[in-house]
Length: 528
Image 1 (spheres, one colour):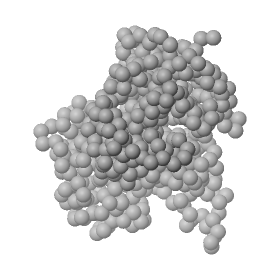
Image 2 (cartoon, rainbow, N blue to C red; image 1 turned 120 degrees about the vertical axis):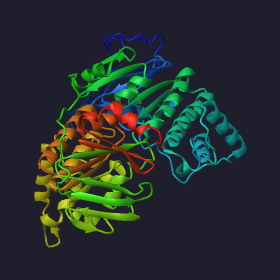
Image 3 (tube, helix red, strand yellow; image 1 turned 135 degrees about the vertical axis):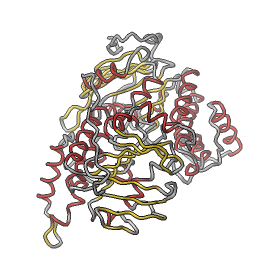
Image 4 (cartoon, rainbow, N blue to C red; image 1 turned 180 degrees about the vertical axis):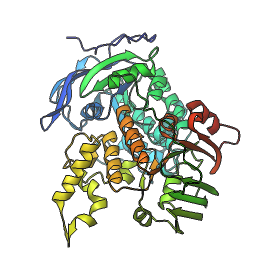
């Protein structure tokens, strides 16, 4: 039986890796309550390659990773590591004892603990019984490990003092170091690092630092399985990609020689990924739905802006320029230190989320898992939150009405699976974002504040989100979209404000909004 997945010829110069693959997955299947999530998929990862795993939200990527990690058990199929079959089910440790390490999107780091303490857990926490920690030996091991991968971080630093990219690099080095400890015991002969959306919360200008670390891993013969929705990043760092669609294998291809359009066609079955729109020009004389005058926050300094009905205003800049802070500052989720805000002509001296929502201003935060939804509640419970007052009788909630409302929202926004009793955290990232967007659109807001609205969202879901936002804007809503994703601004924004050091540096409108012009404005002289 051949374990190599089908290859889509794309003219790649890298060529299919030769030699015995580190990992071979064949005909792997998994269903939940009778609904197939994986339909006999194949995957092959060679030694010394960075391999991208791509597909739309809900295509089966996360299910595969969770099977390999031991979180789910496969219904059928075969798994080989270094040519030797690993019996199914894999058990709660998955393939960790066979040279596979995992770094998930949330990184799994405790903010108040040090880098050294995290590393020591792998040295001393995996074995039963009590042992005294040799801190001097552990410091030497950690310093050597960090130095080898050119990660310049103090082992005694706590995680909460590190930048986002430093935290990601610590998580990667920790995972590699943990597998090296297994290898020293003779239990592992090849290592594969699995990274599940590692760049979602990283500033765009710091992503390359993480990718340089991945290249160093590759240079020493390790392999990386990278799960990502960012096609530019995938094309920049991977050797090959494998694409899933609807739980099935679409194919694999070499990255070199492939274009973004090639990958999009594999993911969606169509090459066109853009949502064209004609830029809307709103008269300066139109009364703003939201007006901010000389506002300042932690990073924002003396900024004024108007949001008018019928337009999308984009805000961008380098990390730390203040664009990330602006939506939360306008919503009252962060303290306004000075300045004034007016909503539909009403002055708000000290904005708070409660007051802004009462004025029909809503916020969709960047971190939907921590701030946008209660992951442990059901879909209906999450979607019902803004409507509890209107669907209650005394102390009793009219759950039948709330359930029908949630089902209507999910149908309208094509949230998959359409089961409102499902735990919200079990939805894919794109379906979570669509559900949140639908919930707040149902409140009929006059102003919507978006912070990285398509972060970790696949191309197909991005298209649906853009369409929904443009439709709402056409009906008279005003939108502020803060993002570092230039492509998103090109597709959606009518005006773009570029911030530097918390101040407005440039404003682009209409046809002047291109990826090149945005990059030039962001990195122009005087940038933070």
